[in-house]
Amino acid sequence: MRRAGQGRLVNGTPGREDLVLARAGFEDFRRHVVPAGDVAHRTADDIVAWVFSRSDSAPHLFGGGVEDFERDLRAVLRRAAPDDRFAERLPATEIMTWRRPLRGR
Image 1 (cartoon, helix red, strand yellow):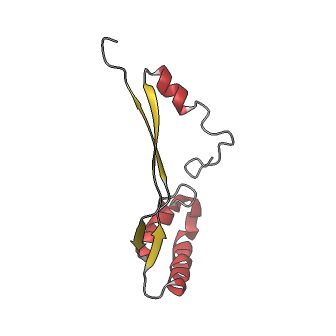
Image 2: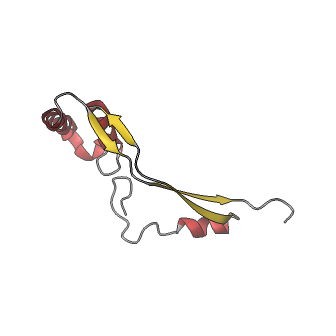
Image 3: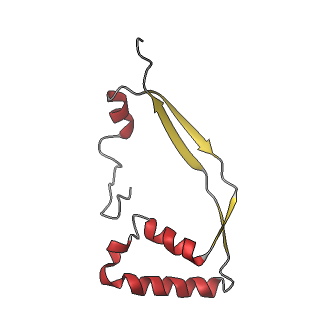
């Protein structure tokens, strides 16, 4: 699993979030899935911002080459969509919830 651009955790998070939360007193784990399907409209600026927000392509990972990368990325985007219009079908999103037990239980 990726880890904030600083490397990989081959077996996921060592502490297992579910066990950490259980030890902290949380219970009633629930998994909710928001289905895929909606379409979001994007511009090149949106895509550049998204790329730099990712842990595997955060600006600090490029060192002194970040400006060159952004220039090249924008050139690719201009060739792909000269009208600066992009569409993305949003993927499903998974939300996991736990709750603290009620006092007095």
